[in-house]
Length: 299
Ligand SMILES: [Zn+2]
Picture 1: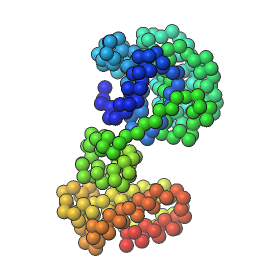
Picture 2: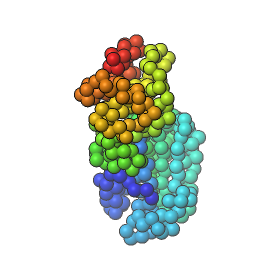
Picture 3: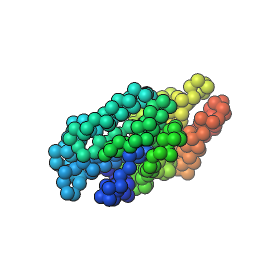
Picture 4: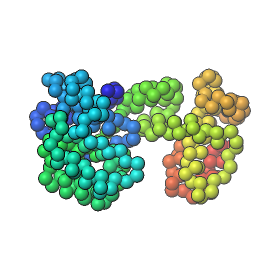
């Protein structure tokens, strides 16, 4: 199993619950996308089903079946769109069957915020008579979209990572250290920049032209554009600081060099901060105002 970064307290808590036979039926894992909620749920599935006296061993037949995704007692839902009532009924049926091989059935519902209202009610019905030796993990980055009744019936577990742990995660996916430090600072240690970065690498062609105004219907693209501009300015900053080999948009080196000549390091840092403020408020401000603000920052 891939290494889990952080979340030791959560894992220790489940170890304690398991040891004292105090496991509940419904857990709601709340935290940013990519933080490791599902990994921890799987780890707990191993922990409570392992045959070894020091669980999880990752090596006994139960552990191996779970790790290979071969156990019928582990039920995973990874929805693309919504999770409807049919999917919950299917889970109910499977929960009622006798266990195939593992002591505990584990249901992991990813993006549980996609449960429809009917599906949420059906799930709550299931819990009126809690299924024996079954753990249900609901996983979400958007708890505000989950039915209040579910929230109140579940035990909520909040996932957080420290700056250092996010840094470790970013280095693990191959992000250069200087860049990792930079974005950790800008995004205040939030994880979303890791995801955005991949997106950025795909879409960065936009930067080859010059900034032109966005229309209301292009609001989403504008958000992307601002993010890309932050990366461009980040390169200007790094270029100016003398680390030419560390810039990401190496094909834009000429443009980066020209632009950074006009500003001090502090100016560039300030511009990135201002763009970030715009980026964060884009959903709430008038599109023309946004266009004008971006122009002003870039000028
Ligand atoms: Zn084992």
